Image (tube, rainbow over all chains, first blue to last red; front, side, top):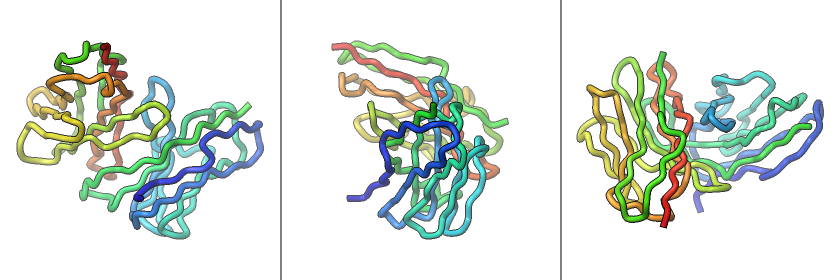
Length: 115
Length: 113
């Protein structure tokens, strides 16, 4: 089954404790992206990747890191989480970026709480 | 600046009635417009997109959207609402400068039996 898999689904952590949220897609998609969803703010892009070893900042990259060492995986790293990073996080992928306009496929989300 | 607005936080519709979820946009150049739906505890799912051509775009689950260039709108519609249509709906436009999607804040659609 074609899917984007995020883990974990729920995560509660404390301020400053490094964490990684994993994202994997099995569709051989070139493009991957991380979003955070907060009430009333819609989706805000954190980072995106047009292909392996190519990553770019989105609208809210501060406090986050990503890597794209292989096509299928795009982990999101919080080196020193803070309470304002409490949010619902989504990973998404699409066949290609750019004007191809192929639709995004989303994971089921990771709800992160930082105390 | 490019932007998307969904003016209604929530839309309530009785089952069987037509529904409309509104979206307006501001872009430079040609707009590439999208609708996605989010069911509880799930990720977003693609519904439909407008790239070029016919102003009425048909998508999944019986939804359609009408592109209106003069009003810079891309409203989502369905002739007869189902209770199972209750969800959060997002409109998005592609940023012409970097191809990333700009998202509206979302509209919660509630269909009452």
